[in-house]
Length: 80
Image 1 (tube, one colour):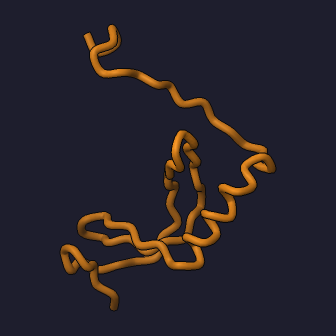
Image 2: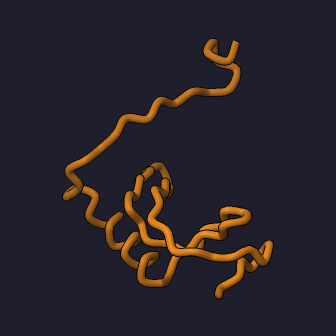
Image 3: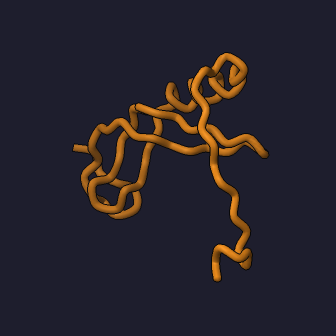
């Protein structure tokens, strides 16, 4: 059984959603196979997954699904 580097909790295989930023570009990866600590939630990506994420970012023009993300600055009226 694998243990978390940080808390020594049990690590399990999961598929997650992960938001990653490259400069001003933000990408949501869905159904991403990872290992996750059951205790603290630390996420571990395999080298293959990291390489796949890098390749995916190079081909964002081929992506069919997009989402809209609201941007709110602290101190704006919505915080009042």
